[in-house]
Length: 269
Length: 282
Image 1 (tube, rainbow over the protein chains, first blue to last red):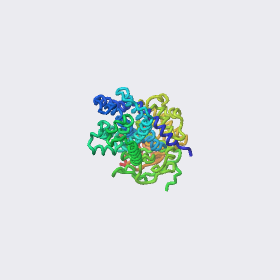
Image 2 (cartoon, each protein chain N blue to C red; image 1 turned 90 degrees about the vertical axis):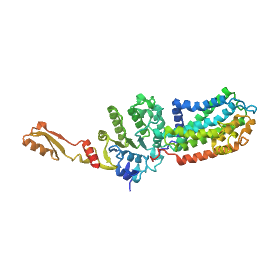
Image 3 (cartoon, each protein chain N blue to C red; image 1 turned 45 degrees about the vertical axis):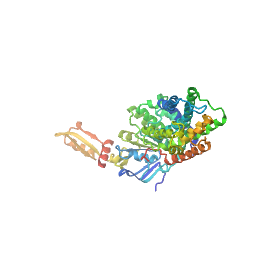
Image 4 (tube, chains in turn orange, brown; image 1 turned 180 degrees about the horizontal axis):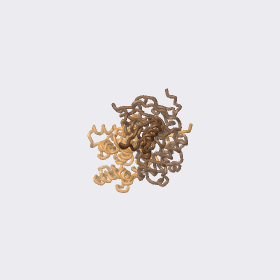
C-alpha cells in the first residue's frame, strides 16, 4: 500500500495555496487590512485628548486595544467567510474527493489566518508608532506576554470562526452575519469604549464570558504603562485569568468545529 | 451479498428527497476497466447515483461497493484510488492552471506529473493563466485534469463535456479512451447519446430513478433485433413498414414492380431507442 500524504504536509500545502489565493484577491486584501487601521486612525484622532493618567493618551489606549479587533477581524471573520465560500465554490467538495483530512484543511486555514493576523498586528503597530507616537515596550517580559496572547487569540478566534461558518447559510451573507457579534463585542469589551469601567456592570460581566475583553485587556497590559491598571474592570492585568479564558475558548472552539464542520451544503449529505 | 470483486457493484439502491424518490431501486455491475455510461434526462437520478458512489451523498437503502468498499464509510486509502470530475466547480479561481494541478496533485500519494496531466487535457497554452480567465470548456478540462491527477482506478465523470466545442469533445473522448486503455474503470453520466455511443462499453438508461434498459450501445433496448424500417415511393405516396425480415419485404416490393430507387432501409438509432425508453418510462 502506498503511504498517504501526511496531515501536516497536506496542511502546509493548503496553507501556501490559501495565502496565494488571498493575496491575489486585492479587494479582500485591502479591506481586511485597511479597516481596523482606518478605525484606529479615526478613534485615535477623534479622541485625542489626554487621559489624566501620566503617559496615557486615548490614541495609545486605542492602539493597544484595536489589536484585539484586528485579530478578531482577520481570524474569526476571514475564517468564517472563507469556509462559507469554500463550501459554495466547490473547494470543499473538491478536497472531500481527495485523501486530505479535515484537520489538514483546518491547518491550512489556521496558517492563513495566522499570517494575516500577524500582518494586521504589524500594520496597527505601525500606525500606533508612526502616527500616534506609541512607545514600544523594551522589556522581554512584555513581549513574551504578547507572544502567547497572540497565539492563543488567533487559535481561539480561528477555531470559533470554523465553528461559526456552519451557522452561515451562504458566502454572500457570511460577512454581514459574522460582523454582528464581532462589532457588538468590541463595544462591550473595552475596545471601542475605554475605560471599560464606564459600562454597566452586567455588560462587563457579559463581555467577560467572551475572548475579546481578555484579548484587549491583554494587549493593553503589553503596550500601556502599569499606571493604567486602575482603568481595568478587575483593577489588575490578570494575565493568568486571560490565558485560562482564551485556552478554554480554544478547547470550546475545537470541540465545536469537530462537532459542526460539514464538507457540504446543508441538506446535501 | 455483493462480492466486491468488480469495480462497482450496486444492489437495490434507493434515495429520496422528502417524498420524492430520486433513485428508486437501482442495480449495477461495472467490471474493472470498463467504460460504463449512465444515460438519462435531467432529474432522472444520474447525478444522485453518481454522488452516492463517490461517497458525497448518503443513501437510504441498498448495497454499494466501489473498489470493494462502501463509499459511505470508506476512508482516505479508498479516496486516493478514486477520481471525481465535479459537475460545477468554481474553486481555485485565483490560482494558475499549473498551480491548481500541482496543489491537488500534492494531496495524492502517487500522482501524475503536473505537466503530463496538463498535456493530457490539452491546456499547455493556458498553464500559466489564472483559472478565472479560462473559457467554460477549458475550465471543464481543468476539472478533468484535477480528477485524474491522482491516477484513479475508478473515475467518475459527471456530464464531463458540457460546454465543450466539437473539437474539444473529440480530444476529450480520446483522453477517456486512453485512460480506459490504462485500465481505469470509468463511470460516465451524460445526456449526450453520441457521447455514450462513442465511449461506453456498456450503458444503462435511467429514467424516473430506475434503470429502464441496460446493454452495449449496439444492442441497447433490443436495438440489434429491433428490425428495420423499409420505406418506398408507392402509387399512393410514401409508404413505410417496420420489419424483422427486410429481405422478404424488399422481395415482395420488387415483385410488385415498386421503384427500388426510392427505397430506404433504416435501423433504429440509439436516439430512437432512447426516446422510446424515456417515453415509456413517463
